Length: 126
Image (cartoon, rainbow, N blue to C red; front, side, top):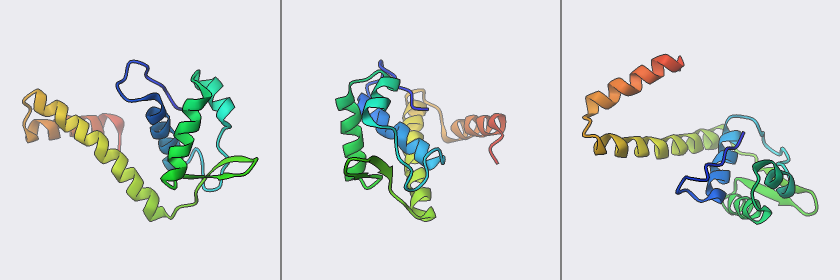
């Protein structure tokens, strides 16, 4: 489920793009699945339909989704390698944010690794 953080410095349309990409990567939406209509998603997220339209258009420009005239937006079929690369890029973006936080707190590499490993253990990631 997409969550909008109104206090985030990230624009809402970008939060929607990131949320939709996570849902596609996690299998909520598979290749050629129809996405929620602009109107329905705007109502469920309580945002302006123009914001959803902008997010969908940017995703279409990036090749993540495609439109069928009069039928809505659909997930573009991608290979497993493409999806894995997209997941890696998404994770790398968040890791860079974590590294910036660690630097601001003067944590060294070993401390960051210990924190990361502890969280991995708690979350039971294989």
